[in-house]
Amino acid sequence: MTVTRFAPSPTGYIHVGNLRTALMNFLIARKAGGTFILRIDDTDPERSKEAYVDAIKEDLEWLGLSWDRVERQSLRLERYEAAAQSLRDMGRLYEVFETPVELDLKRKKQLNMGKPPVYDRAGLALSEAEKDALRAERGGYWRFKLDQERIDWSDGIIGDVSIDAASVSDPVLIRADGQMLYTMASVVDDTEMGVTHVVRGADHVTNTATQIQIIQALGGTVPSFAHHSLLTGPQGEALSKRLGTLALRDLRAQGVEPMALLSLMARLGSSDPMELRQEMAELIEGFEIGHFGTAPTKFDVADLGPLTAKYLHGLPYAEVAEEIAALGVPADQAEAFWSVIHENIEVRKDIATWWSLITEGAEPVIDAEDADFVAEALALLPAGELTGESWGLWTAAVKDATGRKGRGLFMPLRKALTGMAHGPDMAALLPLLQVIKARA
Ligand code: GLU
Image (cartoon, rainbow, N blue to C red; front, side, top):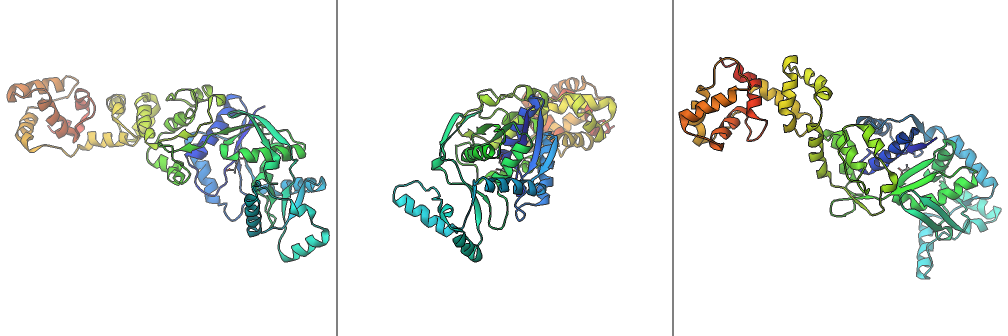
């Protein structure tokens, strides 16, 4: 049974970078008919905020990335404590006392001597008496003792990875104040929750190496790992600083449609072409984690506008019927209304804008040189019910009366009636224009 998880820390709003991770894990679980866990990594009580937990759920719900259950690390602290104790009992967790400044100094010395800046395990050499003295003076914290051998795994995206554990510092698992750090909590959860596939950013590759050893030490089953490349801006520039402006809630506020965003993110950086999907099921069906590449993936937020418009243009009436009814569009005009405007909207709220234009009229745009022409034309509007034929009859009559034709004839009329130089087919729009209907 496939089990995946999306494990955000509730320390901020989630953005497109997080979405890449969430979506991949979601799609893998759904494609396999497995379980997708939303795991809230909230072991840091100072930075974790309940408001962000709510916001993360709201953002995922908006996108339709439904989870099967929620887990909270803050409720599982005793599990991490128990695992830490077994590691201590095996001699794999040892207490250390260096301050950040001392560590920095050590690193500089190592680099000066041309050595890799790997923690020197000085803590392992301390006697009990020395530890007691240090504990009295400053807090001790805890590192996992890596087996200094190569750590290998077959990565779902990168392929074969081999990392020499001797080139990696023993990871800190517990802080001096007792706070369990991410690595400890994450491996215990992945093991105890039966997580089978972990997809996360390439910035986690070294973590994965150390986590594999911890999982093995705890007797757990090592999941399959896949590390996706990080997103960059359109010019290849690092996105990390701009991610704050790419929060999912901001994209939502801008009118981005979930399926437009998901369709893009499910294929960006993969060898499969981007295909705009109308349904989540198609996205799940067409997802292949193995088709993603390792090169940094360019993301351009400007792509979301046209994709959103294209998605909306392709929406069948049935999917918007309720929304259209809620605007007060009479049932006998609703479908015609959608078919007239659907290719002329860029975001969903344009539907309401078009309806108010139809019912309340637009602010006419009449160029000075067209003022007489428009006045003359409006006087010629056919009386009675406006139908699909009315536009043709009217413009023919206007042409006869004024001698204008082509663009010089049609454009001033469009601008006078809709306030815009572009929009739906006027012949189809005219019968809906209630303001004109009401004129007689
Ligand atoms: N909370 C971690 C993060 O947001 C989770 C990483 C992981 O997937 O293991 O980076």
